[in-house]
Image 1 (cartoon, rainbow, N blue to C red):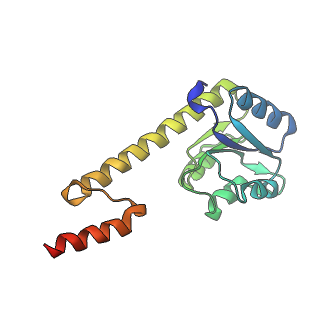
Image 2: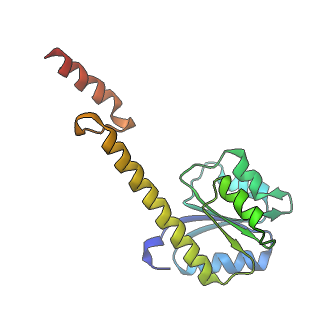
Length: 164
């Protein structure tokens, strides 16, 4: 991983202590900010009042499935999710992607593979944001784009234009 990911905040949800430690050490060595959880309830606690750029989650956890986290609708669309599974089934990957995961990894995996998947997910999310921005700009009348934060200003401008 290069410096372009430096400082990203990542939640790692993995019940196997040695694998969790290996993943955390790998990500921290690349200067990502990492919080780790060993089960679903701990992960839910970690999500309260905090935002993450990325969640790396094992599917099967002692107290449930990380798929339940995806199904719950509590995750922001801005969070990239990578699902890890030892089952490696295509069905699990397809369901995870349908529920909003950005990618998946079959265990065991090489940490460098993790780096590639993270880069791919971040690049894909950036491209989606750029495409959305371009679509919004193209659909705006008169070439002006007012984001949600500018709603009040847009209303005042429309009043001024109508007064002419």
